[in-house]
Amino acid sequence: MKIVILSGSIVGSKTKTAMEHLEEMINKRDEQYEVVTLDLADYDLQFSDGRNYHEYEGDTKYVTETIMEADALIIGTPIFQASIPATLKNIFDLLPVHAFRDKVISTFVTAGSEKHYLVAEQQLKPILAYMKAHIVPTYVYIEEKDFLEKKIVNDDILFRMERLVDDTVRTTKAFEFIRKEEEAMYDF
Amino acid sequence: MEKYRINQKDGMEFGLYSLGDHISNPLTGKRIPAQQRINEIVELAKLAEQAGIDVFGLGESHQTYFATQAHTVVLGAIAQATEKIKITSSATVLSVSDPVRVYEDFATIDLLSNGRAEIVAGRGSRVGAYHLLGVDLQDYEAIFEEKLALLKQINEEDRVTWEGEYRPPLNNAEIIPRPKEGSLPIWRAVGGPPASAIKAGYMGMPMMLTTLGGPAMNFKVSVEAYHEALQRSGYDPTTMPIGTTSLFYVGETTKEALQGMYPHIDNGFKAIRGAGYPRQQFAQAPDYRDALMVGSTDEIIEKLLYQYELFGMQRFLAQIDFGGVPFDKLMKNVELIGDKIIPALKKHTKQ
Image (cartoon, rainbow over all chains, first blue to last red; front, side, top):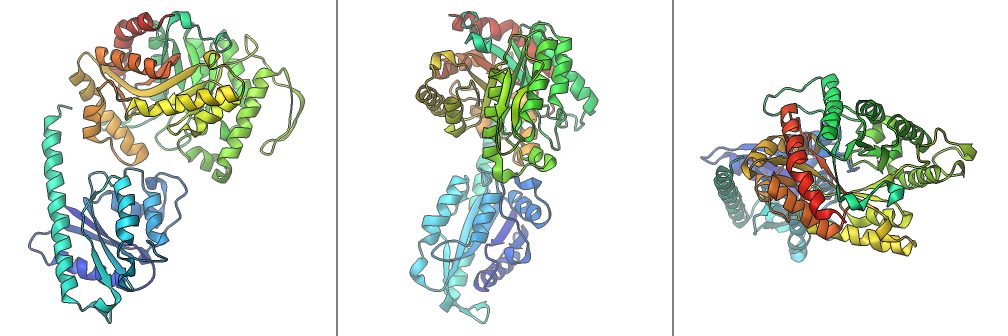
């Protein structure tokens, strides 16, 4: 199973911090996965110009191809101006229309307050659904008060993040099982 | 319809078209040399003619995995190698060429072929040509509309006076040679969404509509929008032909067709679009309601007649060589098309 963790912002520390916790959590597990972390702050990405994703060069090509190879994608996003950051939306714009077919996607959100709790529900999930993702229904919403000095200090958040990883892995396995069962029935 | 060389008494036309893609055969992992690919395309056109297929089309894509950038040159070779099959582009990426040169080329092919040449002009669904030939994608739409209007004017007038933004003006210019019958059928290539269909209607041009897969019903919107736009522009829809196109693979049985096509369509989609063809969607494709033309001879006939009811098209073009399909498979498809599909299709669509 290839899991890609995508941090959707190029500024700030909360999403990055949560992503680091998440990566550590996954790597500590008994079951081993191939984990690739993509922090958009580390890459220089172009805006989508209508090309197929594999026709870009450099970082844009690397990031989109890595996402396309994933079985499961865990997206971390802050909230900017009552929505997801443009940097994350650009990733979606760079990818093909049904890019997330047969991929499981789960989400964690970081924000300054509880006021934007529904942004992921109302703005991020419809995009993922349109792109044919199997969406893990629940997400973890992490607020400013849950962090201290670039660490998550709210144990309840860490507990819920573990659950999110569980759900992601379980859902990925389930859909893989169903897909393989169906494909075994096809005679082509 | 005569202006577009369509005779509805004979029933719906059946044609083949190729993008000239040059992809390795997934079954062998090998890619044939470009020379062989181009020669096989000419050979395929000859076989198509012998099998009673009405039209052969070839397109241009100026990027990796394509071999027929000079599609007019290959169409010229096909003109020499054949006697009666109609020869068309599928499509000419008009935005990256000068309409005057395009018209000169196709008028010449028309003379070489004794009046068999046609143009399908499109914007292209890939951007390679724009990058290679230095056309700004920002002006993508405006450039195409201007060039298509000029191409149409050249087709309709012996002396052209024209002024636009993306090409130097023409002052009483004589664009020669003229085609055999004075004008060529020029179709507008139309993709999925109805926007281009509407433009084709307003401009009063035949429409070549691509229906690559998914429910065929989804494309009816484009046909209706096209007819409505034609009427608004003062054209009678019954005088304007529609063609549809799809990826195509026929077998003696459904299983043979599915097994024969899947590795190629999956491989081709991976190479060109970066994601394979979903197996589940492919498994459902032989259903008559799905636009992807894969199935037994009976299933293909049922699909074509269902679409004829839906769209009332005068021509269907099949793309049988996408994704490194080896020549023996192409020959088998052409044989089944000629023996089984065309006779049934003509019988049911003759007027």
